[in-house]
Structure formats: C-alpha cells, structure tokens
Length: 117
Image (cartoon, rainbow, N blue to C red; front, side, top):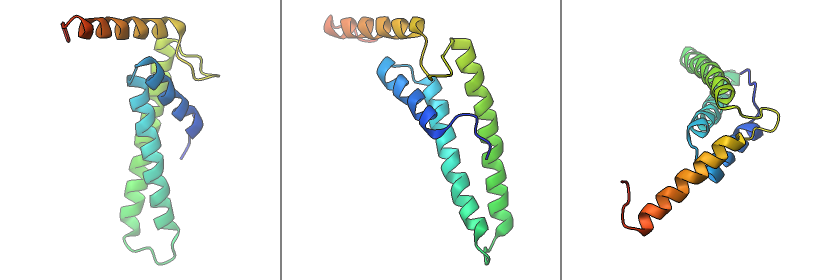
C-alpha cells in the first residue's frame, strides 16, 4: 500500500483534532489507519501458502488500497484548503483560533442555559 503520510503523521492529525476540536481531517486520518490495518491483515492471509479463498483476499486488499488512495488524495486537498503545515502536520493558527472561539461560545451557552442555540 502506497502511503504519502505515515501512521505517526496521521495520528498527529488526530491529536490536533482532539486539541482544537476539529474532527473532519481526523475522521479521514482514522479511516486511512483502519484501511491500513485491514490491508495488512489481508496481506497476511495472502502470504500463507495454503490460503483458501485467495481471490477473496485479493479483492479486499485491492479495495482497501483503492479506498486508501482516494482518502489520501482527499486529506491532501483538505490540508491544502485549510492551510495545514504538512511538514509538521499542524493545523493553521486561524483554524485553531476559530475552533477556540467556537468552543468558548458553546461553553458560554451551556453556562447561561442556552445550549445549542
């Protein structure tokens, strides 16, 4: 499986989402990590000499590779659109501030009894 971003880079994107409450790029990163796990499992099944249902494992492995490639393109575009620093995998300052403002507004609403309004 071709990976533009390593597991640690994807996990850093997920960490950024947890810190700054911005889940969308993290959702894509989580899906990519899950697809890597499925693909690794399928490759293990294919590596056995007596692998029954070899065609099934090939089908699933190929599907995970295609889905991973598409999500990788998506993540790349999202990071470009949002202005992420791809060398450090960090969210841009403007989004961090925006997420902080949204969180403060939500917390203020909860304190004043105006949740979700």
